[in-house]
Length: 574
Image (tube, rainbow, N blue to C red; front, side, top):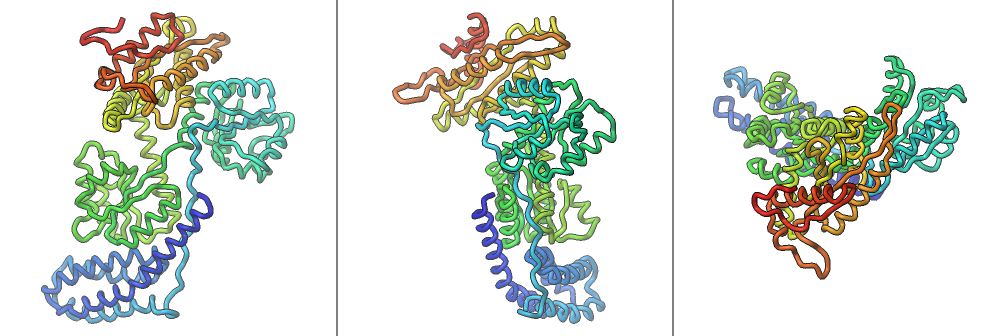
C-alpha cells in the first residue's frame, strides 16, 4: 500500500477514535441513568438486559479504541449483570444494585481529560501481500553453482513464461539484491566451490534476507534436520536432485496464484457502528475488502451480493445473536464451508464453545490488536481457499475439475447474455496422447498434462477460467473475449507447447495440442453478431467448441479451429 493511502487510513482511524471519545460521556451518562432507575425487584430485568448489552459493547470497544482499563472495568460490570439475569432478583440483588450503580459511575474517570489512561496505539498492521500484475512475467532467480544444471533449469523455466536469472555465486546475487528483487528465489542448499550453505548465506546476507519473496530449495540431501533448517529459513518448497521439473513448476504455479490472488473479502456483522467501521479500516489497511452488514435480517442477500471469504461476527447483538445468524447461514448448502469467526467480548468458555457448535469456526476475544485481527483473518481465509481448491480442483494440474469448470462456463454464458459481451469456450486436447503413455509410461503422460496446465495458467488472463475436462482434454472459458482474440491466444499457446522438450528416464520427446473454440457472439467495429451463436445455450456453445476441436484433429492436428456453425440437433461431432 502506498504512503498516501496509509496516511489516509491512519487519519480515518484517528477520526473514528475522536468520534468515539466524543460520544463516550453521553454513553456513560445513559448507563448511569439506567442503573439509577433500578428498583431492586423482578421488574428490573428489562433494564438489566439493556445494561448487559451496552456494557458488553463497551467492554469490547474500550480496548479497541485505546482505553483498555475502561474496557476491563466494563467487563466486570457486564459479568455481574449476567449473573443477576441468570438468577432470581432477590434481597441480595436489591442490596448490591446501589454498589453497582456507584461502580458504574466511576467509569467516567477513564474519559475525563487528564484523569484516565493514555490511549495505547494498536500494534502495526501486517502489510498486504503485494499483488502481482497477472499479465507481467514472473521474475525468478536461480542460485546454483552447478552451471550446467542452472542453465538447464533456466531453459525449462523460460518455456513456462518465467523470466529467469542465474547466479553461480552467492556474492553475485547479494550485489543484485541491492537494487532489485525477484518474485521467487530457487536456491541450492550447498555451494561447494564457496564452501557455504544456504543457511550461512542467508544468515550472513541482510540483502538476501530482505528479499521477502517465496524461497524454494533444491538439494541432494533428504533428511529431517535439513528439512527443519529449510523450514526455519521460511522455505515453501524442498526439491531433491535430479529435479522433477513438472513438480517444481507446479509448486511455482501455486505460488504465482497466491501472488496474484484476489484480495480477501470480509463481511463484518456488528451492532457497534464505530467498532465495525474501525474493523473495516484495519482490514482494508491490510489489503482486504471489507463491508459492514447493518441489517442482520438481510444476511443471505449480503452473502450473495458480496461473496465474502469470511464472516466476522459479534456474538451478542440486540435483535439476533451471532450463533442464530450462523445457524441461518449453515442452513444453505452453498455456505456450509464459509468461515465464520466470532469477535466478541464474551469470556465465558462454555458460551464460546456453545457458539462454535452452532456454526462458528473460531473465536476472537475483544479487544484485539489490529495485528492479531489481520493475522487471524488472513490465515483463516488462506486455509479456506486451500481447502476449496482441494475440493474443486484436479490434484495433478491444479485446474478446476469437470463439474466445476462446466458450472463456471454456464455462469459466464449467462453473464454474457445479460451484458451483451462475448464469451468464448475453447476445448484443447493433447495430440496422440495414448502413444505418449504407451511409449514413455503414465508418469511421463502426467508430466505432459501438468506442463500444458501450467502453460495455460501462465499465458491466459487472471479473469479466464481453466479446467481439466477429462484425461488429456481441457476446457477454457474466456469472458469478454471475441473469437479473433481467442484464436490468437490459443495459437500462441499451441506454438509454445510444441516447443517444449520433455525428458523422462533419459528419453527426450515433444508433444503438440489441438484446439477448437466457439464464441457466443462476434465483437468489434463493423461486425454483426452471429445470431445462432448469440442465442446458444450452455450445451450448444460447448458442443460447437468440441466440434471445432474435432475439425482441428481431422485437419492434421497441432492447429486451432474456430466453430463454423452450431451442430444440428442430435448431431455427434465426427
